[in-house]
Each structure stands twice: as C-alpha cells, then as structure tokens.
Image (cartoon, rainbow, N blue to C red; front, side, top):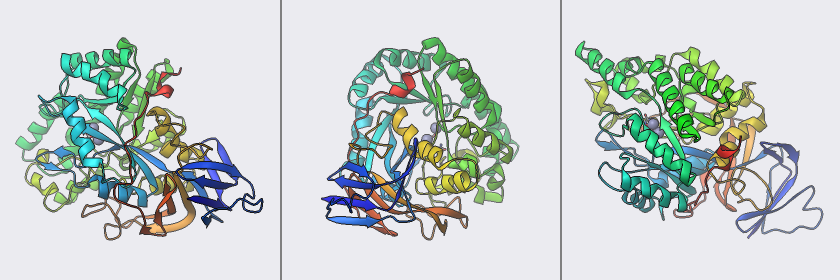
Length: 465
Ligand code: URP
Ligand code: ZN
Ligand code: ZN
C-alpha cells in the first residue's frame, strides 16, 4: 500500500516546510515538493491543504489497567490506545507493575498479555519496581536487553510502591552498568502520610485535603534527594509528573550544575489547579499524585518547558470512573484511587495553551509531544519525526479547527472529563500508524491488535552531555 500526502506543511522539531510525503508500506519512503506532479503514484492520496503534518505524538506515561487502591484504571490497551489515536497519539509507553514479592518477569509478562492483540497503536513498557533485591537487580539487566530499559521507583505511597533511599541508590547503581534509566515519582510519602492522618483525624476528609496534605515542599525535597542520589551513582535520572515549582527548582539547579537530570510535566499541572479540588466530593475527579497545585505554579512550569528544564509533557493517564471507583474514597480522601484521564487531550491542550497561547513555537510543541519522548526513551528516529525511513506515524493536524472537550464525546473509557466544556483550538483530522489510517475525520478506521510492542534502546539522549 502506497499513500501520498500532498499540499501539507511538515512540522518537525527542527523546522517546518511545505512538502509531500510518500508512504510505502509502514515507512516514509520519500519527502519532496510536487511528488504527484513529478509522476509519483500511490494507492491513496490525502490532500492536506491548509493543514500540518506532524509526527504521531508519543505519550511516555500511561497506566492502562493499573491496579490502585483496590480497583483498576479503567482503560484497557484497546480503549486507551484508541482514545490516544483520536487525540493524535500513536505511541504510548505504559508502566508494567512488579507486584511485591513477585518477579519483574511476571509483571512484564502480565503487561504483554494485556497489550498484545488488543492495542490499536504501538506501545512500549517501563517497569515499576516494587522490590529492589539481588534477583530483581539481575532481572533489570535482562529487561534492558529486551527493550524495556526504564524503571520507575517511588518515594511516595509507603506500603505500596515505596522504596527507601538505599533501594533507590542500589537500583541507580545497576543502571550505571546496564544503561537503563531510573524514573522517579518524587514526593516524600512518609511525611505526607503523617499530614494526611492528622487531617483525617481532624475530620478533614474531603478530596481537597488530598491536595493540601501533599505539600509542594515534599515534592521539592524528594526531587532534590533523588537527584543527589543519581549524582552520587553517576547516572541520569528522570523525574515523572513534576507538578511544583519547588521540584522544578531542584531540576533546574541540577541541570545548571551539569547533571543529567530530565523531567516531564503533565497537562493537569499546566491547565488545572487545586481550586478544581473544592466543591465537596466532586473534587475526587481531580485526585492524583502529585496533586494539583495553586495556579501560580503553572507559569513556572510553562517557563520550564520553554527553557528545556522540562523536556516533555506526558499525561500520567490513569482513569477511574467517578461513579463506582473514585467514590471508594467517600469519607476518607486517602481511599480515592489516584489518577486522572488525559491520553486523548494532551496534543490539543498543548497546541491550544502552548502554540495558540503564544508560549511555544509549533516546532517546540512537536518536540515536547513527540520528538523528545522518542529521543529520551530510545525510539528515535523510528518514531518522533517525519523523515525517510521513519515509521509512517503521521497526523494530519488542523491548527485552526476548534472543539469542546467533553465526556459525552471523548473516547476514553471513563465517565467524566477534567476539562469538561473547555474549548481548544487544533484537531487531529487523520491519524496514520505505520502507514495505516486509524482515525479519519472523527471515525475510527483502525484495527484491534494493529499495535505492536516496541523494543526500545537505551536513551542515547540521556547519555549525552
Ligand atoms: O495519581 C497518579 N499519578 N496515579 C498513577 C500512579 C502514579 O503515581 O503515577
Ligand atoms: Zn507516580
Ligand atoms: Zn503515573
């Protein structure tokens, strides 16, 4: 199958140019001006006049079917990758989970079983490590060799995913020898649990107090601590879902002294605030960790993206229904499953708030949603750009279209939207995954099982100065 996309403007992290793209099978075969006029033939021609061709976006932080708080994140690999595709995201990297006392292998196999034959777009895995011991340290080397080179550890969630400083340092030492990357959820979970218990003891049980208990300084402290541990182990480190200026300061300071520290933020920290957590139990819709912050943190996060102290935006997509899941925490905010839906909305929110909002060039936008994720997570140049030889993951994007975000029209399997009623400018009209059109003008045209596991290499980008 050959597809020719004509009359569009190709936007990559490096620049923008008016050119046609020829896709042969699953890859980009040719890029040039007037390919059709010069005799290039194809089975299908897509006229992209007035629109941009951007690389399929990459979301490196999702949790399909994550077990949390006695329930499971609702999207499956099928529904989640389908929703992602509607929003222009053609690759996700999801977190496989090692259950306490079990092996990394068992966790990874379980995640392969969830995804294989179900995902409609390509996927990779990071590994959540719940135990650091001689066996799991050895298993890390094997996972790196299998294309799962990143490991998430937590200074949060004592008794669940929490690791102490020794365990974190030991895992970091292992990545110094195997080339892997440690990803850190950095909040001081021990201190948070004390504040949270005090609040509940004082009768402050509403969702808002989830946000109040998790002080920004607890995130700043833990971020600085894990960065210092990584410096001691002489390895790069990646901070996930950075939400607060306190943590950004720690990242910026480390980068200024030359350390290989990388970080993502998420749309919820750029567009939502702790004010959304008020309104009684409705606030449960916005319970995630780290929590939403006061609105004055947002400008600093945007500045972090502009100045590359934050390299990318991922969603931390982890959807729980309001009815039947979030309500497990009625009467005690500590029992509300943590996580927000968002995999479908990231590209448009970032376009609207970033490019239309005058904060980001369209090229930087592409870098933040596609190219930097591909580079940091061992997928570049196969993914994350539009170039000859790259996978034909291409989005025909209309930068002038507007739409209103709503649970009534979104494709994520969750009964509410954090952005209900918000108008955004920019829309993915046609989405191709390895040459196949999987979304066209609001209709799904892909296939369950089309998505393939991506064996990723270690992050070259993280190893450069
Ligand atoms: O609230 C969140 N972020 N839920 C998902 C698990 C995690 O910590 O990333
Ligand atoms: Zn986390
Ligand atoms: Zn997460």
